[in-house]
Amino acid sequence: MRRIERKADVNGRQAPAGIGPHRRQDSRGAPARRPLDHPETGARGEIILERHANSGRFEKRIAAIDEVVECWEVSGTVDYMARFVCADLAAYEELTSVLIDDENLGVARIVSHVALRPVRRFTGYPDALLARKPAKS
Image (cartoon, rainbow, N blue to C red; front, side):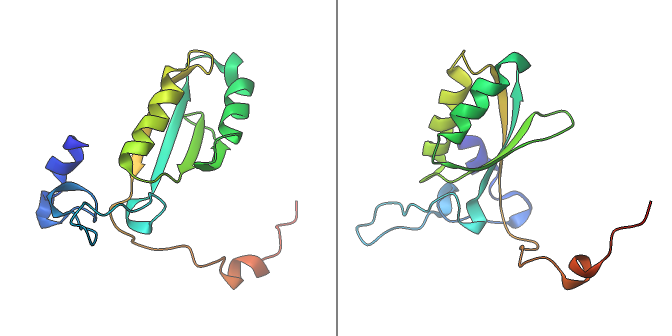
């Protein structure tokens, strides 16, 4: 968290509300909390397993966690991509720490990505893509 706060003002940009020294406050003057599913503070995790023999156990555990709203097995250098919805960054950090610390799951590491600002938002599939016919083989 402190690393995010220090980097918040790089290139003159402010951190999203709820991160860094520019925090919003609620009516009592306490820092305002915003769920991580908010577009400006969404959390995604690249999950790498130590042992693929544990993938079934890992998938069952992930499917049972309410805060994991999506999880995909993927190709490449990581094993899974997950989308998390947590109350705040502290809750996200706690959840990912629990996953990493559970030796039965075999999670080697989780590389986290927190969105800073939207560049393009998903608004649905373009009609042109939906109207295309598959290429004949």
